[in-house]
Length: 205
Image 1 (cartoon, helix red, strand yellow):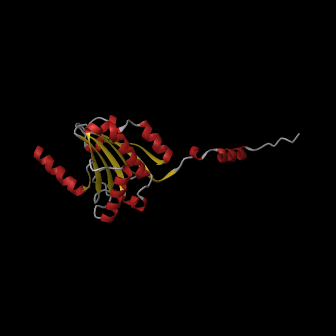
Image 2 (image 1 turned 120 degrees about the horizontal axis):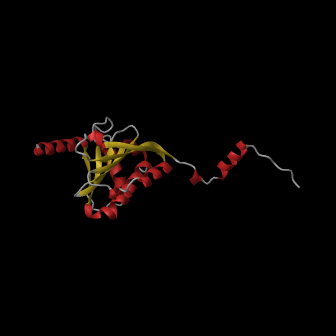
Image 3 (image 1 turned 60 degrees about the vertical axis):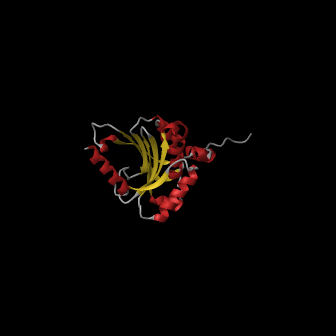
């Protein structure tokens, strides 16, 4: 009868690590990300309506966050989800966004249940999974807006004047999502969007 071999706790832990399947270990993302939620409340300022929910930096934590929040298609009108690199606030005034813009797709409300959640998830996976390769350094984050007439999904970039990077990101996003001609898809410079918003506000005064 062979003698018993007594293994210390340290050796047992090493065995456990070797035997654990790779999917049981967390896989770090290249960047840390923060998930934000915006809910329109006219009694509060825009800043007060924007809340950081949590941050994540691994594939597993991304899925944990995504599956724990309400699907975008079930949000109320006037609500947004924003997922941005840690340290960047999803607002035009943030120094990382001031000179930037966004690739924007507009989705008819009638397609909300069919398309919105799929396209939002695919956009997030392309972004946090670094599918944009070295152009990913120009990406600040992604936003989904829920509105009465239509919904919007956008990827924000930090430099609206870097045409090469903008076109590469737009091409990869369109290809990765399989966007057809029926979905309006264009690049907007934040400075121009701000100007349009101010003119709209002045008309309402």
